[in-house]
Amino acid sequence: MSFWQSFKQSLGINARGPLDRDLEDLQDLMGYHFRDDGLLILGLTHRSHARSTGQDQPSNERLEFLGDSVLGLVISDQLYKDHPEELEGNLTKTKAMLVNETTLSTIARELGINAFVRLSPEEERSGGKERASIVSDAFESIIGAVYLDGGLDAARDVVLRLIYTRKGRIVTDSAQRNYKGDLLELMQARGDTIPRYDVIQEEGPDHEKTFHVVVSIGGQKIGEGVGLSKKEAEQKAACRALEQLSIEP
Image (cartoon, rainbow, N blue to C red; front, side):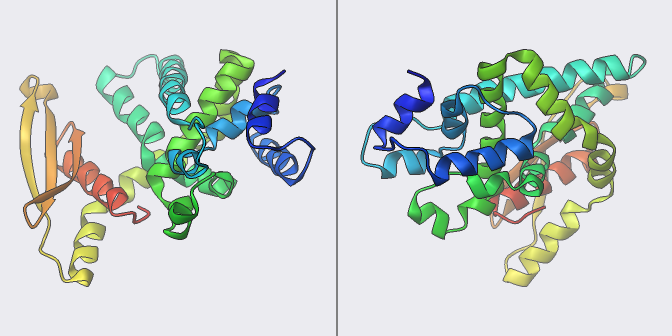
């Protein structure tokens, strides 16, 4: 009995129904069809849904852990091959643009993956299917599921086709977006205090120094970022703050 059959039996689902057809639609969007659909449904199952069933059901957290590593490996490998003369610092910067929460959640929404995420009724009513952290985690979980189902080559194909092919746009958008300005505008609209940015750590030699910045509102830290300049680190911190506030960057 496959994982999927066991999973469906535990939910009391024995016949082929709308859920199977929905999964086929999602697999068409992804361009990958699972041999064991149970891995896909597990990848879509947020912990809130698993807990809401009243049964001892697994969530996608372990798959997210695996998918994050697979994603990082595939992107790093492709960047290394495509840019043989690029410095390590620049490769790291580009990789961060391709695998961060904002990028993954944006692509997942474009593909419609967020519509398939399984949440508790309360989490869904609160807008969970649009929350960047939930959507990006589900995307990573699906990558982990593809890896377990079809191996590294299958996962590589999905990652390169769905994420890496968008590299040019992602890098351009990340460079042009003024996250600090967006965060300031949001705080002013809410009547909150002006964001404060503090450098909490500097590492490396002067010609290749790394800055770690935190952004706070009213003394409460809401985001942090690391960059090769203070400006870059501040922008990343502001981007993270917007994600934490559930505002799509």
